[in-house]
Image (cartoon, rainbow, N blue to C red; front, side, top):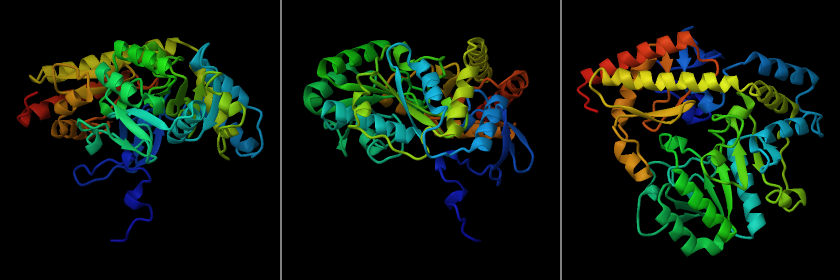
Length: 419
């Protein structure tokens, strides 16, 4: 057998799916809420490019905007006439307080830049990120991921490359962090919802306390909204949940499938960018192609009725999934938001990483994912995975998905699983 030129056939292992009944899964095209594999089969998609396609795959408005940008020249190299317009459109998410923006190409780069801004502003080096949080794949923040050694609770707070960890929804841990390391702490880096930890949502009281301690200590707050941005509306998810960030990282949904990310910030946080202390480089950042995708996406989302339908659809699917398992005597719940959620086989929502780790059911999750796929529904197979809903999911997708969940519930019950 010849070795693949691209190892494993994919440049990001997170995008690969395991063999099912001896067959792999490779996409030939995507449209709306569906994927079409190389054998011509249609699948309802709940990976939605890890949340990047909030409005659906290949939305006509985005396709047309990008086509025009390609025809006009996607990479002029010098300043282009729509980058500022796209920045202003994106800054609507930040409201009246978070009003500055600069572009990057990936969420990982956006987080990296936000950390540089915080360090330059505070003159400190240490970044504290949430246990179980995913904030990109660069080494300094690829730390404390689910099931990693450093995520285990010990008496010593781990530190690696000027990054340390804290535990979400544990106020005592936050107090200890500031008491012990506050003098060195440049920023708190946290997702408003920890997607890779099974959509664990921090509690408002925790976020309010975290904001207060950070402000008193002169520590900046970076809200990593790369995954969850725009999924609660055209506003900051972090502020809605009680966190008041100085900097916000965005990506995925803002470009509707085109690779683009951004850092938003308050005017004060962006002083070090505007005076050149923190230089922002990147040939691809804010190019006409991605700026056009951002503009088209933000224009579409001006109609708030889209969100009403999105939330109603997602809530209906969450109920249907839980009811499918209940009908087979299996207890299940969902956590997260109506536009993105995780499925758990338990009767109580986990509120911390340690509690969540005791509740994951890898074998059950894999069996459900396999059965869904056999019935034309693709989901993320990880026990910490998510289901992403898009504006393109409609009646036919709901009908097919509910039938698939019922089949998955029957199969799981037949296996002897007791939830």
